[in-house]
Length: 475
Image (cartoon, rainbow, N blue to C red; front, side):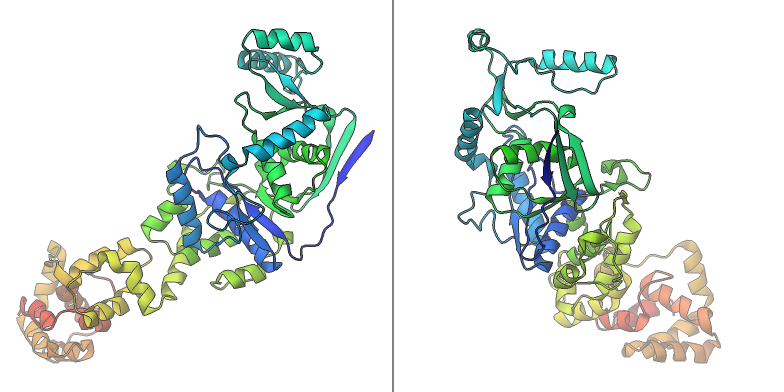
């Protein structure tokens, strides 16, 4: 039995990796993590990171998805060395523009009799699969058109049947390779079945164009989802038939929902665009994805160069990774706490009133940013500080009134300076209150809330005289 051994023991130094999405929807978390891991592997090894758009299936491709995908990758900071907008001699990097290259390779395979036309219809193929399942056999192509004569093919075409092109899988071979995550893998060619490499409309199928593009673009290492593991022997056979180099493959675990089911819309946001629109920070998402199915001793918030230095393909887990938004929120909180004043202002810019004085905006950000995780958490405080009339719940209104007029008259008189210590001292002097009995009525009168940012920074964000006005309402 012949053995096709593709252990590919090439070193990682100078590794060329790629991210090759199909633009049929938004960039979801699983694909974003795949892009990140390939980017980090290339950067750690001083190599190159390639972006290829696999848009050979025109029926599923949308230009808006391409633009959204590019925007999401740029937002994450995953800038590519070659790809759309950064063409080089190995491009083009849109598969829809590579038809001539594929046609040349198809002709080579036809000349070597490594492929053959298949005239089986969809109904015939499905009927054959049902029969195989019924008899307890794994469904694979039965080889119906493998040995048709020239005359038989002519009769098929005279009936108007447009053939696909199937790869003639050699018999009696064992395809072996070492996966970067799952280790040694072995497949029997007799279990695979001849597969389509060119559709009836003349376009290249995934198995084919994905493999030959990697080889022609100099890709040396590929990290992709473990759902592609079964595709690998087919692609290695194609590359061997064309005498093209094969990359080293690593198949990473899938991201599942907390309940163990595939992550979907019913579990909340799943696309990078959705997280971006909600105000999640790119560094938060990157740090979370870095630790999702990848073990590390690093616990701090890391930038991309530090993430690359800490990335190790040996630490990629074979077990499924489970998405947990609470963990993502922990990283988001950390990222928000690391924002500079300029970054904080840019982050909350859509919420900030355009006419507010710069000093007031600066004070507002200093008070509120340490107390929020997402921009939506700051909406309430924008209204409280800038323009929302305060309304108290009945029980809070009663608590404030119980403090007494003298309490608030003294507090209002001391509010000329935004100093919560002076305000509290004045109120305590006339009431004798301490602790929560002292500060809770003040906080309610000033903000309408029992909890929130520290009063000192918040008072500095209020317009001049506003603290005195709010306290005077109850004097």
